[in-house]
Structure formats: C-alpha cells, structure tokens
Amino acid sequence: MLIVGIAGGTGSGKTTVTRKVIDLLGNDNMILIPQDAYYKDNRHLPLEERQKINFDHPGSIEFSLLNKHIDDLSQGLTVQMPQYSYINCTRSDEYILVEPARVIIIEGILVLANAELRGKMHIKAYVDADPDDRLARVIYRDIEERGRNIDTVLKRYYDTVKPSHLQFIEPTKRYADIIIPRGGENDVAIEMLVSAIEKYLNS
Image (cartoon, rainbow, N blue to C red):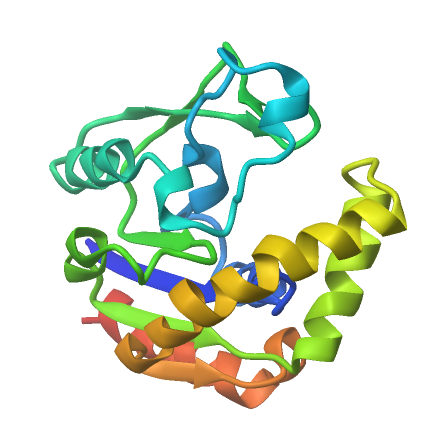
C-alpha cells in the first residue's frame, strides 16, 4: 500500500490537484482520505462558539483517529470515516465506509504537520500558491459554499487563517518530496506526482 500526502495552504488548489491525480490514475486502486473529515466534533459548544474555531490550527484535528484509520486501512481493515459540516461546525452522525486500496491519498492543509502521520507517507507533496490567489479562492469558497459574508471571511482570514498558515502550514513545505507551484494549473508537476504513483502501481 502506497500512502501519499498532499498538503498546502487554504485555497492553494490542493483539492484540484488531488482530483486531477485521481482522474489521471482512475478510482480503482485509490481512496481519498480528506483531513477535513477529522475535525474534532464540537457539538457540545454553541453554534456561535463553533464558528470561532481556528480550523487552521493543528489542535482542531483529531489526529489520533486519523492515524488509527490509516493504520487500520494499511492492515486491510475497513474504517468508518467521519463526515464534517462547515455549516454547523459539527460531525454528522453518519459515517462513510472506506475500504483498503493500493493507494491512499491523505489531503489537507495540515497533513504534513503531524509527525506520526507524516511518517506513514511514502510520497509527500506540498501545493504552493500566491497568497493573493489563495485569499481570492477562500473568499469565493466561503461565501458560495459555506454561507459566510465578505466581512466574516476577511476577519477570519486576517485573525486566524493567515497567522496559522505562517506558523503551522508554510513550514511543512520542508517535508515535501514534490512542491507544486500554482496549484491545479501546474500540469507538469502533477504529472510528476502521477508518475511516482504509477511507478509504485506497476512495480
């Protein structure tokens, strides 16, 4: 089993890169484990408090469960992956059953920040993008997909997203085997990542 980590800042294009990799390789041998599914369940907090959570801080993620699920999948076991809602800032009561595959892609802003998780990865990629481009994507995504207004998005960006990126996310670039500038637009770098995975699949 090959474990691939794809990290990068919020709005860097990680999801686009991941989708392109899966599209090029096909779904048959691959499963995607999004870090976002493992945000801690905060249903014990009022909604107003949940909306203030810093989702760009390593402490917001239940890495112990994520690591356990990767270990279980590596041992050929099926896992119950949580589902997380950014609207309610809570986990759903329903789970997604994930079965083992030859390739696991773990994607998320902080997947290279956890030493235990990072140690399980055979290939580590970091998706890089200009801060202005990332901010533009964050604004569009949070308004269109998460029902937030422009003032809320910008306040959150400057209060938590940008500082956390500089403190926790950007430094993990040094662990990457492959850096993908310009996100999903960089077909050459994506092809390099695909080639590395194909080499494993064909071995």
